[in-house]
Length: 190
Image 1 (cartoon, rainbow, N blue to C red):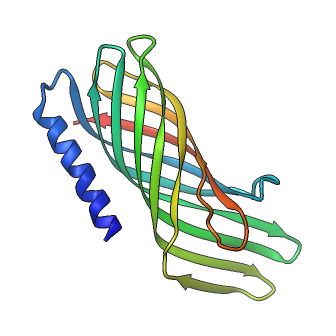
Image 2 (image 1 turned 30 degrees about the horizontal axis):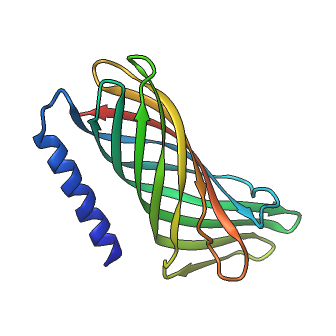
């Protein structure tokens, strides 16, 4: 039910923004490359899982230099741990809802920061070693955190950006494990 409410909220925001003056608001699609890991008990990060993200966004300018951009993204996250006995991969796929506050110190360069909530939609663990195994679990992980990023956006509406997600929600009940994510994105205003 939470997933449906989040999706409806974003589509409502996006549709409202599209109805405004097109010079002040933009709706678009974005996608890109992920480097995901997890920080365990603040003692460093795991190896990175390579993945992708894809979704929609709506950017509404509050002034010439500031905008707000809610997004709805599918994102492959998780982590890998490799040692002498094999490789363990935690595959967590999320539906994320970031709300980014963007500042344009120049016409085509932006800085961004904002909160993000996410809900895991799939959860799979793969062990590849002497004995190989795969287990799937019901996704019940709720994630939240902060995003920080920068990028460039052309006058034609094409943007290139990099963003870091600092997860603040715990993935497990027994230990402190938090998502870390680098996102490299290409966005296109529609």
